[in-house]
Image 1 (tube, rainbow, N blue to C red):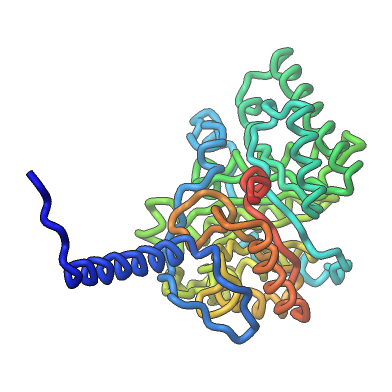
Image 2 (cartoon, rainbow, N blue to C red):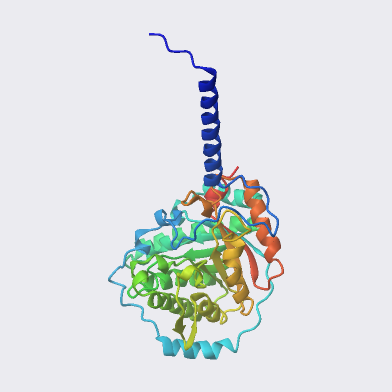
Length: 396
């Protein structure tokens, strides 16, 4: 059977339809990738405007964390009791007047490494540190959550041997980092760490970092909490209570760090300022405010601390860009003693507009440069953190 030869009009209509479909497909592809936008000026508004998420997707760190950081071990559930709000308030009042102004520090150029400590071989360690150095990274946040695997062991020879091996990997990592001009912070956290029965976990990890620095020449620069309680089911039911528990954890930790040489940093989402109605105002230690207000007040007890804002957007400028969603935190911190570090995402997550995954390293650096230049004159601006080193190194 022979096909009928198309008429000229039919051909024209077909060409028009094909060109229209191609134009629509190309437009959709560019919007979804959002990685080919031209460099923006300070006044450019980015279109289209992505909706603000109320919760972040499951992160890479969720799949690279020991179960002992997640589950509650009933043997230790009652081993830590918070001192209570009235006592904490008294401590806050007595210590805050004794603090000195923070010393000047170089702007942060940090990144996270989630690989469990005992999986870090010398070859892998050297590769990560070399890659970080070549890309201008100056600070690595090293997850030590896996220390909890040792913490829960019964005292004895086996536990001592595990801890010694754990110490050795960390010491080797810090030494190699130092040789490459990079500092290392101990990092720990999981969403339930501030909840009743789980407090032993943050204090065990923090206690390890403090003790490690006291007994080793190669030292951590600081300690970081990446506790994200807004991911708890209970958060939706009583946000003020969950956030109060989180603030109390930080407050108690500041007290435990009082005689330590460790700096302190705390990772938070960009909506702890109440933006998008995600977090309420609530009273903490006799004051009413949003979570960011209370957190900065608590950190005033330890000048030189950092608040790391997960301002995850793959554009810096315009409405709902990285600068816009972190502006309130930067402005608020200008009245306090902590720096604000702007964190950016490079991992493979959804929705696409929160990450630089599938973009180029050149594009990433151009957007980060926009943040740096825009915030350079802000008193509280503390630099950039890139989540996370493995993903960042894959950008072409």
